[in-house]
Image (cartoon, rainbow, N blue to C red; front, top):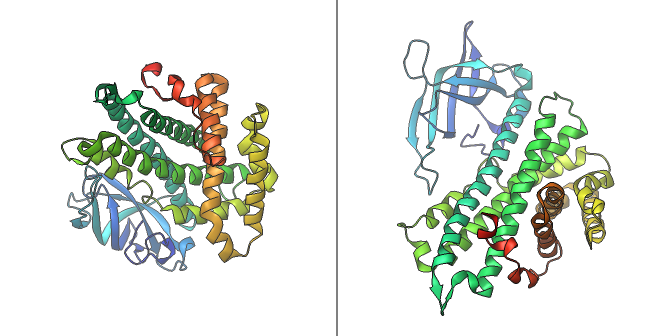
Length: 378
């Protein structure tokens, strides 16, 4: 989808498509093509001849790597020299009468494209939390066996505090991710015009994509710190996991784009009360201490955002997105506690206290290894 002159602005895309009676022919350049030259098929946006300008003039096409005659179907100008994710090459691709097959109705291409973006954003969230899980495994091995000042690292208060942050962010991000996946799984077969159910699923996607990327970047940097100087060496895996995590805030739309999409989706949903009540239902249902105060504050923030002039709403949208995402994560953890046990209630309490209450994690977590110790969950 990405073209050099447009980036996230898909409406600026210039790749064209013409039908020759048998197949469609694409002409143009793509600036970031994932898996370039390796995948047997790719999907690409292009503007059919006579289609209007802007994003709604785009159609979606299936592009095979090989033409019908067996020759290469497009030219990879070069592979990007990336900081990480090198196992999945990104390339600059040139289309010159490239054979392609139209996906669905050419007038609905932007909707197909946005649905594919939603799936990729959910995958991004799951991938971010997977990277965190790998970093956590490395860290737990390190703090069990490394000794400092006569004690194992994990016995020091500040190490346990950092492990608590790991556990809370990872559990919250993972719970939110799979709730977002579940909501989209229930709504993806809808067609325009979309129902509030579909828009709520999209809202959760923006929450999950943005906040899990925040967590992954933060926690993998913390993992390097917990390894000390060794964490900065290429011979250990930790530095790589941090570099891998740094793409997650950028890929498939950086936080600014997620905030704009969040704002757009929020405006399409019903009343503020209905939206926030749906997100926060587990907090209210379980009568979580302080839950009603937090929910009321978030409701006021969202209502104030929707009432602002557009430029001011955009200015505030990223902050409000993260607040709503934090509410959703705390609620998701309490929802999970209903079936998965007391540990997730503790994690939900800690998430709400720290991220929605703005306070340091309470010191009782130092004594509760069920929160931060991998051993207790093995």
